[in-house]
Image (cartoon, rainbow, N blue to C red; front, side, top):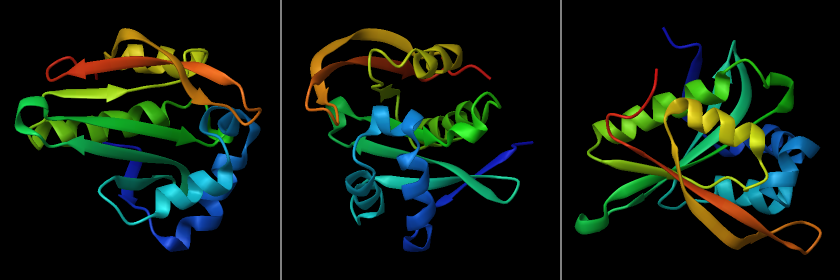
Length: 161
């Protein structure tokens, strides 16, 4: 039985999402909390979910899809409030969403943490994601400097339980 529930993120979640993305341990990887909160709540093609644990919103998870037949795959982004680090909740949320995406016909899922985000990379590798390569100067930090990203992917059948 799952400990977390993924439910569609709504405007009513704005304050909590902003709180999660404002935590220094999260903001260092996600960027400006105002901009990121607006992006997560924007109507678009991405699917964004609140991660609930014991009745509390502890994080957010988002998926996007490349639907072109020859390149069809999906990607995932994740943020968990640091008060809930170490409980395996982020990993469980990824497992749920990844399986859902595989069940919808995707054969590959990508995730692209900052190359310096050792904690996240460790979790993703435990789930079966593999390192594909470094994305040089991939994203700009709040301080204006550019940072490398790590492209990782997971093929259908590789998801670890």
